[in-house]
Image (cartoon, rainbow, N blue to C red; front, side, top):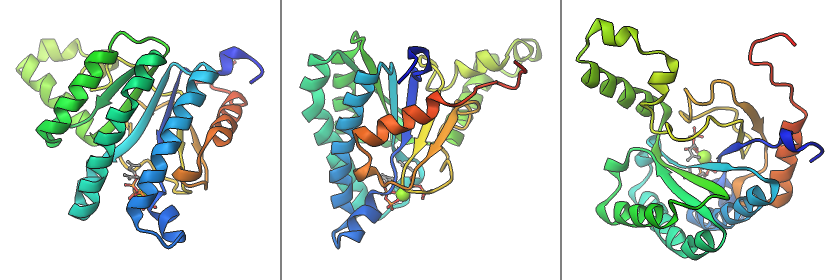
Length: 237
Ligand code: IPE
Ligand code: IPE
Ligand code: MG
């Protein structure tokens, strides 16, 4: 990193390719998810080291509920276990842990574990680690629109007051800045219904490396690439 101002405040990752990583090794898909947990740990450390303030991870999409029940339950179990395992690390390293998404679809046990982790780490300052769970961009925009309809009762005068900033405050991401950099691993060139609103002006970085192989070196490579971008936001310099 040459200049500190070029470090993205918020890095977001679409962690993809776990299944293919495992199948290439003749293993079950879930083995790739296990290995991916280590990449989460390593990238969290790297984010702290680089001075990134927010690291968000697309861990499970609304569409992922449509996977075979055995994979869904293995993933949920793995996430619950990993969260609990990391609590001490989060407390020791001043990391705030947040889960965003359609929480109503997660079980009571999972929601209780999430609430506990979020409460215990709520005042931590060094890094905010956001896990998008049961999330999709269209779901987020739709729940915001429904809340807006309810809150305004459709009153035209109230609706006229709502600009992009006010609408953004109805999204589940309201307390966090939009991502500066969105990374997707495994070579797929799509958003898969991720942060549709919030990613409107993000920089995108696509790499063929699968998630279990995405470690410290690859994370810093992505930050280097970001540092070379010229963000104009539609304006002229
Ligand atoms: C990403 O890896 C993890 C989740 C979506 C939960 P995949 O499970 O999508 O792995 P591939 O893309 O099928 O290889
Ligand atoms: C996107 O990956 C969702 C997550 C990484 C959590 P998927 O593997 O589910 O997306 P598609 O099927 O390639 O679009
Ligand atoms: Mg995938």
